[in-house]
Length: 155
Image 1 (cartoon, helix red, strand yellow):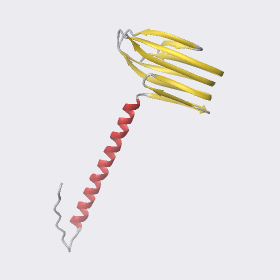
Image 2: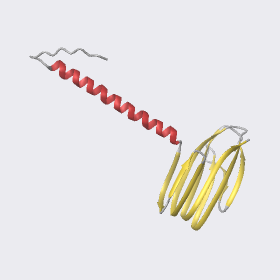
Image 3: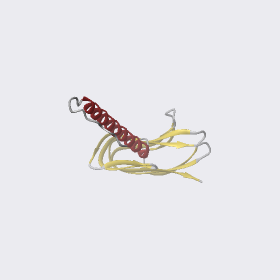
């Protein structure tokens, strides 16, 4: 885009106004770009959350798992998942506890518990009764150790 500017040597207020408008347009473009990047990051990261305090390790999630390995964690971690009627999902849970407690479970959109794992190593199959948005959650209380919960759609 080319802009022809005629500068009046006596009155340069037109130039000042044009400069302000161009500067304002540039600022708006930058703000829009930042908002677009933030939205993309939110979409790519999926809907997951973690609350609480992790000491000496980490808790993280991806599209089909939540895992943690730490000296101590009191809190929770969760991940949303979309399910369709008739699908079968396999959930695998494995944990090692040195102290405290860890529980993993799956809830539906009404916060009703569908599956629960409370210790050791286990695998459960879930048949989906209706289209819904489930949430996979892990809760710990002064837990020292590690855990892994994974899920995948089975055929």
